[in-house]
Image (cartoon, rainbow, N blue to C red; front, side, top):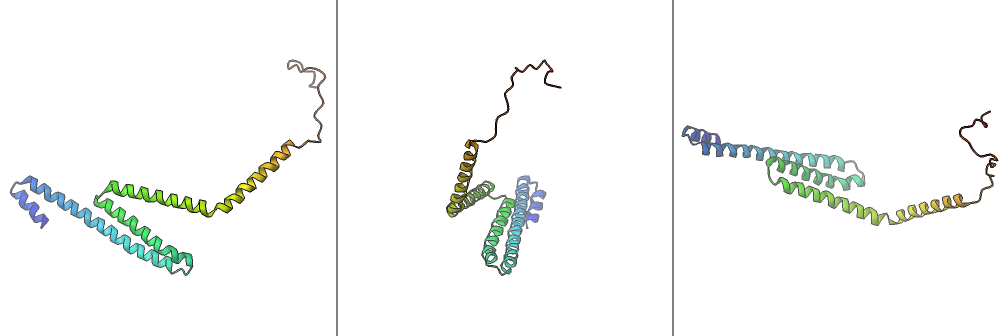
Length: 160
């Protein structure tokens, strides 16, 4: 139908209408291809989640839904970008999502690893204290004998 309208506008010498139909056809192609990308992402996400979930480990069963959602979100973003819809919004959403994940990981590591971090810091402080004690401890070595003559770089008296 779109091709028919384009040809009708062309035959009637209505260039503006023909251009509009060409733009609609191009947009339709982008939307269809973007939808195909999203559909493929959903299928791939289900397949990958099923493979991960069938491993039988508790960690794999917990990771399978997360992987499925991550693949679907990524595929949807790629499909929407290919459609030409809201490029700036998609970029901002991914930036905010990545920042939120980084903050959550930092908080989880910081709150969950408080005891381990305390042990590491205590060990480093102990090591620093022992090194400082070694540096200030008196030595039993004697210092080299003092020279009785002054040093003259132009003379070769000591090179024999």
